[in-house]
Amino acid sequence: MSDIPSLDLPAGVVVKGALAHRFDEILTRDALAFVADLHRRFNETRKRLLALRAERQKRFDADETPDFLAETRHIREGDWSVATIPADLLDRRVEITGPVDRKMIVNALNSGAKVFMADFEDASSPVWANMIEGQINLRDRWANRIDFTDPTNGKDYKLKAKPAVLIIRPRGWHLPERHIEIDGEEASGSLVDFGLYVFHNAKAALSQGSGPYFYLPKLESHLEARLWNDVFVAAQSALGLKNGTIKATVLIETLPAAFEMDEILYELREHMAGLNCGRWDYIFSFIKKLARNKAYVLPDRSQVVMSKAFLRAYSLLLIKTCHKRGAFAMGGMAAQIPVKNNPEANAAAFAKVKADKEREAGDGHDGTWVAHPDLVPVAMEVFDRLMPQANQLGKKRNDVNIGAKDLLEVHQGTRTEEGFRENIRVGVQYIEAWLRGRGAVPIYNMMEDAATAEISRAQIWQFCQYGVELEGGIKADAALFKRCLPEEMERVKGELGPENYAKGRFPEAIALFEALSLAPNFEDFLTVPAYAKLA
Image (cartoon, rainbow, N blue to C red; front, side, top):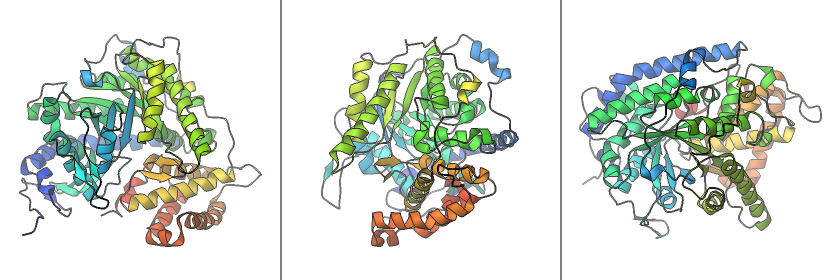
């Protein structure tokens, strides 16, 4: 008999993705009915809010710049705080992030970090099998059957007695799940990821002393936070959960959201656990939102650092805003990974991480992110030393006074041909891996996710739009890009080996990266056109 299941579908729901072993455990009639109900209630609002993003972008393209909202000043100046935060989220000093494959989940939960963020978004390629297998793996975690033996090497993976707290990151509001249709319409990736996880796991997590916890990505306004809050209220009601059971941490990783941090906290105040400095996507958003404004062309990506200019301003404002409202202020990602066979380079990378975490802990962040288990002790040592208590909610940072000008201050630095070329190499290599189903990709000793590729193509697009003069007098334009692209791909082929290069999906990745980098109009997210190429 075949172990490929068949599905019992509720009315109006069509599953177009191929079915595999155990998929029927996730795609149950009741779970899909739950997701369909969320879709029918909230998808029109989601689409309307995405249209508002597009309208706002037109204003930015016409030289308007973001500012604090006059109509919500009473919220910023009001005396209110978020609801009580659960006990297992009170100490979040080190969080590790990664995709939802089984090996990653076990290793991350066992890493010694306080929290593991299981990521359906930028660290995962949304291949249908990745998304549903991820849900199976997370359900197995709460059913205490996540242990497994790797068939390729016979190694056993077993969950330790005190694993990290689990937080789930669903896909952003802009991403569809085309393998599920509801009433003839593609489902929202956000509602599918959230709905399937909370339906199958909320009560199991609560019974084990935790709860249904989420990281919310890519929000651009408090209205988008309000939509999530409405979804939470509806889900809790449908599942018989007390209002406020679901807890969310919002990534401040778009430029408009930085001007609405108070308002985002307020909209989600019954469900709020904190805000996070999503630094890489934030850089991408800064470029994207102001892409048509020549005054905001950034230097090379490597020089856009957290200790200066708009990144410094937004991280300090986030700490002050969160602590004023009783919410946690989480620091950003350390994407470095161990440099094998080069002790000096490895020591330099770890020293860079240590300095970055010392800045965060010293400023008042309540915790930080790492991408690799070997960085957990590095970050933990810093926060144990500088934050001996569970968190720094008492560090109010009333000395911080950040205005719109500070949030728009451009980093000083150089724009170089090497930076231009590195953007090509990194961007193409990431897209190629993503097309093969991998969302977290080691490139040049960094664990990269979609945000890095977004920054890479956004910088090239902006440089070429304005014919930016690079160091040495070379002009960045389409001609330079077309000269550099094949040269950099030859370099990548040499680094990977011709055989590995030939096995990949480089022709498709190169074509997509070139189209995005030289398009007359800036594409909002590379993952949207790339999604059409996935299984």
